[in-house]
Length: 256
Image (cartoon, rainbow, N blue to C red; front, side, top):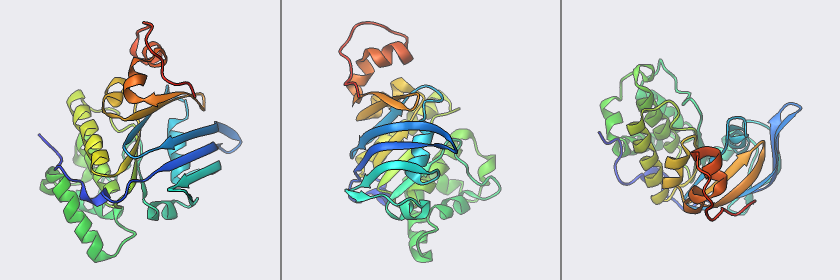
C-alpha cells in the first residue's frame, strides 16, 4: 500500500537554509542544550543521539515552543521567536506522538494545518494534500483517533505540509511503527526533500535514517559530538559503537 504521490507540490518552493549559532535552551532553570552550532542545508538532515540528549528540545527551540539563546538565521534572516511567525516564515513541526485531535476527522485535522491562510487557499492545499497522500482521501471523514499509528503519522505529516513549509521538522516519526511502515515513512521524507522542502528529522532508527539522509549530527548530553555526510556517519566508530553494536575501525565522521 503506497500512501504518497510523487510530487509534494505544497512545500516545493525555494530551498530553506537554516544556520544555528551558539544555541542554548531548556526548561526553566534546567539548561538542556549548550552552545549548539549546526547548519541545516537543503536536503534531508538527521539528528541522532540517545534518549535525553536534547533532540526534542532542539526542535522545540527552533519552533519557538520554548525560550532559546543564541542566533538562528533562516536564509540569512533572523528567525522570529513566536511560533506563528516562524510558521509564516516557512517552518513546520511534526511533533513526537503526532498530537492529532482524535475526535476530529482527517479532513478537519488537515485543515488546521492551513489555518494561517484564507479559506480558498486552504481548500486548494487540502486538495493537494489528498493528491500527495491518496489514501487519506479515502479516509477523509474518518476520526483520526480510530486510525492506526502509521496512518495517524501520515495525517500528521500531511497536516504539516498544509502550511506549505520550506523547512519541515520531524520528531521521531517512526516511533512505535511497524518496520514496513517505518520504511514507507522514511521514503516519504526522502521524497519531500527531493521535491524541494528542506527536512530536519530527529530519528531513533539510526541505520534506516542514515540510509535516506544527506547529512547527520550526533547529539549527546546537550552538545554535538560528531557530524558529517550520512554515508560517512553510518561507517563511523561513533555511530557503530554507540548505536549499531560494532566497533570495527573505520573512517570516522568529522568531530564537531
